[in-house]
Amino acid sequence: MDSILFEAYLPILAILAGIVIAVALFSHMRSASAGRMTRMMERVGLDSKIATRTYPQTLAHPQTEAIMKQVRRRCRGCQSEGLCERWLAGAVKGDNSFCPNAETFRGLASG
Image (cartoon, one colour):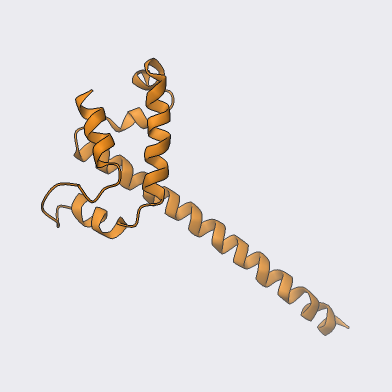
């Protein structure tokens, strides 16, 4: 009887383990993306604190929060994570034109 019960619960446990792994992977990817975004902002001369909702500049300019929401979305969907990491580490020369947020960051830096 115990063997039948174990066999019945085994697929459920496998599904739950898969869900836990997927959630952990998603969380790690999101955290890595946020870290790259912050480092990219700092590297191009932006105060990365503008990405926070409580930063005075963000509060003074409501459009900044909307812009940063788009920046975060683009960063999470970026297909150049490896190149970004190498560029941030100084292993790749040139500008950050590979970054989907490069133009936005230039606009924020000049404005």
